Amino acid sequence: MPDSTIDELPIGRSKPLPGRKPRASPLSEATAPERMPEGWRRLYGGLGDLGLSVEWHDFEPATSFEWSRCFHPGSLELCLNLAGEGCIQCGTRSLEFAPATSGFYVCKENDLRAWRRPGARHRFLTVGFSPRFLRDRLSACDGALHPLVESFVLQGARPAGLGEIHRLTPEQERWTAQLAHPPTVQAARRLWYEGKVLQLMAEFFFTRRGEDELFCDRQKRLARERVDRVVAILRQRLAEPPGLDEIGREVGCSPFHLSRTFSREMGATIPQYLRKLRMERAAELLRSGKYNVTEAALEVGYSSLSHFSQAFCQTMGCCPALYPPKAPGSGRTGARQ
Image (cartoon, rainbow, N blue to C red; front, top):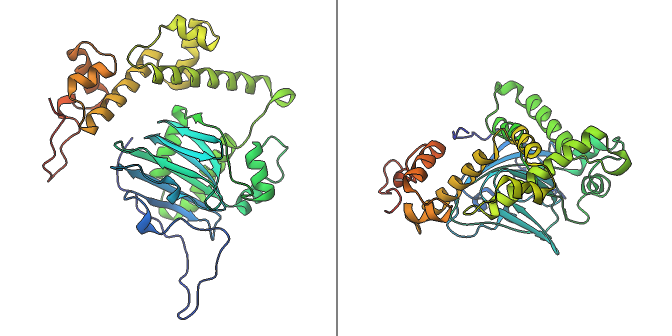
């Protein structure tokens, strides 16, 4: 995906009159910008006025980053996570964000603990919703809302809570890229953003189970759950991945049907996706500075350095010995040999 600077749009907030304290709002905006990581941008809206805030995050923390600093107390937030790993805890439950995953959560003051892991680049987009915004658009729905969304619509952020993690489909990743780089003129952006946000709500905030679940919805859900399980297996066993027959047995599906399902959902075959995961992990190891090229190759299951270098170059766009690329004007060099 392209990596260009995202300009912050005006959100129409007025300044308080001289000598008068600003009125407290029960729905807090994001923490002060100086406490946010470099790379944070508000793309559209504002919870205090529109009840909707679309924000972009792109940073690489040297130490564990307290992600909860970015949350809006009193809101429901959807995270579309493109790169990097993070965790949110609420009581005994947790959400583990891996690359190309999504999830939503209800934020109440100090009720969520969240952090982002160090030593890797984090790229994700968040959409924050106020109770009023969702109530105006979802209160007439037929009961198919996710329980956490329904509770938020009826009660606001009382209490805080976590949804579930879902894998982003290739189409959803494209939506995220579009939200970060809107392909429309400035004058039309409010209309464009609200249309896209409604599309995201329809995609993520509804659920059907049991007798209410349509046959086609059930088939789609089962396909996504199987593919999610395959991705989890591959991530856990990058260095020694199981064969297709073994994966099929683990997810309860024939190898032929599983291959077709995976390719349809992910836009890539299982071996192609495995190579992508391996190269992303190898890039993370090289970026840490703790692994040389040979060590990174062995860590992700390559015994041939030439095969590893070829796969890395095709996936990441440069040879592993030159990764990460040298920044202009810096003395930074590639991976140690």
